[in-house]
Length: 184
Image 1 (cartoon, rainbow, N blue to C red):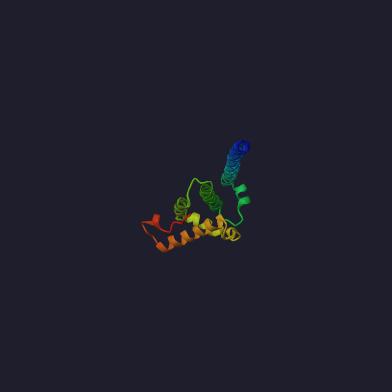
Image 2: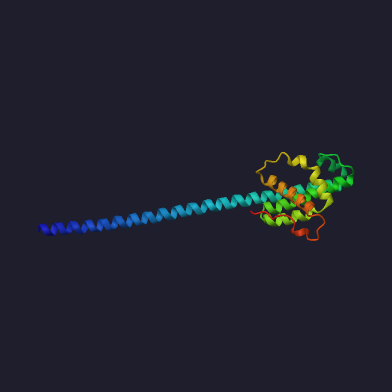
């Protein structure tokens, strides 16, 4: 009889052990799924935040370009945006338009429509324009306050380098290959 009682206890002990192991496994699986669910919710929240930021950038750019357009069309408004003395209303309008072109190219890069290499190519085209170069030189003091490691500071230096490289290349027929494309 002693053997039988011990056997029953061993049997109940095994069943309890199996039950506990099953419960521990289920708890571990539930914990893992809960963690995955929380990670997915966090990623979704980050993606929504990034999309909201991008939408805000688009709205801001649309407003900015609208203001530039009004200033280009109306010399009385244009002088409000100008922080330098323009020799003529035409020069002021060219500067405002150059600013709109540069801002648009920069914006395309910021929202991911263009890669840094594509931005470089687009800016290379702009840098061939004498009015753009005048605008760039006249607005140099504006860029002086940019932090060196800021995105706009780096891109401003990229434009400076492009202008320098184009000047060094001279009047080449293969201007579209001038300048070292940047890496992301």
